[in-house]
Length: 51
Ligand SMILES: [Zn+2]
Image (cartoon, rainbow, N blue to C red; front, side):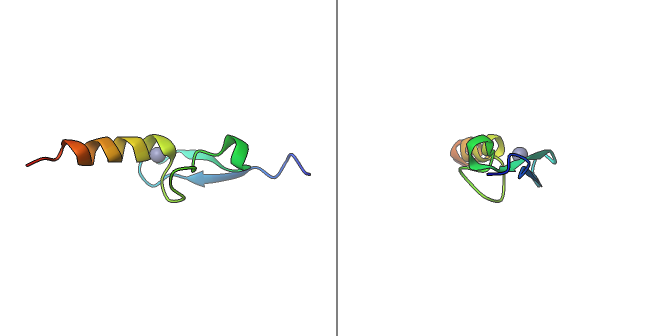
């Protein structure tokens, strides 16, 4: 196992390079397109849109 196999992925929503690999520290557990933080925000935003 190589500990240097860190892979960063830029989240298109918050524009921040966040770890995608390894899975232990991944920010892309809920979605492989946007980070977990933005996923939660988007989820909450869509909940608010009741109009
Ligand atoms: Zn994000």
